[in-house]
Amino acid sequence: MTSATFPPPKTLVIASRESRLAMWQAEHVQARLRALYPDCDVRILGMTTQGDQILDKSLAKIGGKGLFVKELEVAMEQGHADLAVHSLKDVPMVLPEGFALTAVMEREDPRDAWVSPHYASLADLPAGAVVGTSSLRRESQLRARHPQLRVEPLRGNLDTRLRKLDEGRYAGILLAAAGLKRLGLGARVRTEIDTDSMLPAVGQAALGIEIRADRPDLAQALAPLNHGPTALCTHAERAVSRTLGGSCTTPIGAHATLQGTTMLLRALLALPDGSRSLQAQAQAAVSDMAQAEALGRQVAQQLREQGADALLAELGTH
Image (cartoon, rainbow, N blue to C red; front, side, top):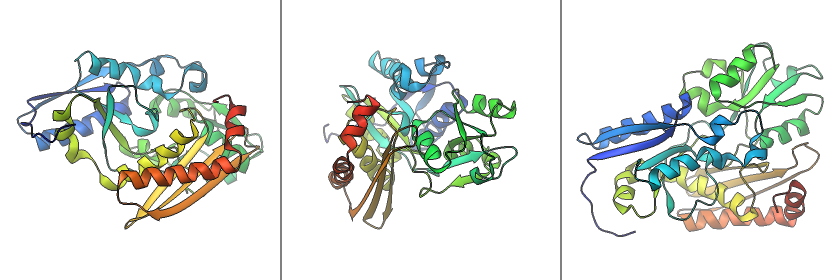
């Protein structure tokens, strides 16, 4: 990247998945960019990704959450789009060569949400009740805390998942609170599950903006959208997963919070059946990305000392 100053952009094309939540995210970025650059024509290029098309198999079996990102990267590579907006938890820990995560926007509520028409909380469910989730991370923590429940897979966009719940296929489902709140569906949330009971996904509730690495003009234009504290926290979380070499489908949870310059980072690695779980945490003064990276590596090392590599081998990610 160069320190040169570039004129404001005249046009910007945002690549986005076409689900309602993804479009909300793209429109949110579009509105922010229009406010920053009133003379800029900011458009959205809606696309269907492979992850959106294959709904009859779990993400772990078809290649992970990177399937939600690839087509958007191709659009940028071919010059059809300038930037892509992602849920940061869907972004692989290592980006393909030639791409950069240039901005991380302020995080929404990072907690998981319990959604159910009949039961106020997970504790109220009778033995054998069916809970839907698409996440191995959620499944592992759910099975560890509530072994009497049945966990069934739940794929599809947010509206599809809620429809399946309303059709009576599940006693309740687990979703990210942020997505429900962003779409004005906060009333569907019965309980937000505190992060002590269920550690969120790496980067959960934050939006990441990806560009081609050879676009310093875009990096400059998008810099005002970066939220420093969120960027530091999510960088530390991503460093845990990247250091362990886990994939997007590994049951890893990580959550960082910042009080002043003091960051507390907690992480978890578990087997999907809930039979084993490793947990670690560390605290340090963090004011730049290098310090956030170091804290993430430190927590990953703690998990390694507890046997993370053997657990990952058992999961088939090593």
